[in-house]
Length: 68
Image 1 (cartoon, one colour):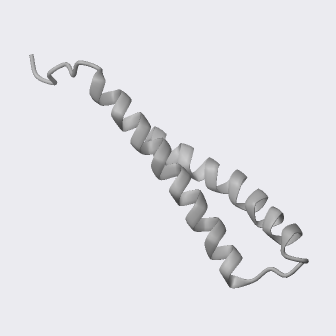
Image 2 (image 1 turned 180 degrees about the vertical axis):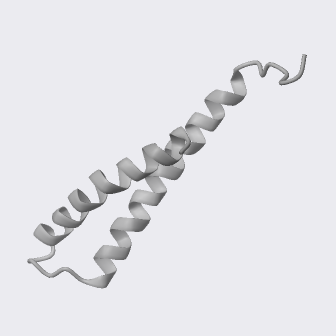
């Protein structure tokens, strides 16, 4: 399992329940499908941004050729 996937799984497991609990508390204890989808999409969006930033940082580093 690569590093990004591992990070993503850990992130989903930790952040999504917190997000759902926050929505549950804010929306008068009603857990709607919309709030569940919103939480998952929000988590995906944040991960996408983190992924993009790490991708940008990797590009700035000079890539060494694989074959010598």
